[in-house]
Image (cartoon, rainbow, N blue to C red):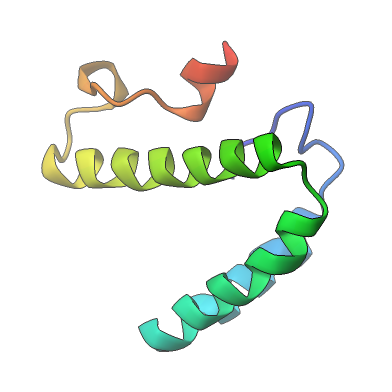
Length: 89
């Protein structure tokens, strides 16, 4: 997880513990958990903000697949922009 102005006040220790625990679950359980978080998350965002979040998640996956397919090449050789590129950090 990277730090930005939007995430500076997050409790990274607690989040990391939750993420580590969730990652120990079987894939089907992780997918159910992921889907289970959507309704309340969508309620707390505008439709435009929610669409932006979904785009961020898609980009996160694309970035991972690109890194996996080009091991050891580093970020300078990647085509898919990362969060830092998009945010101008």
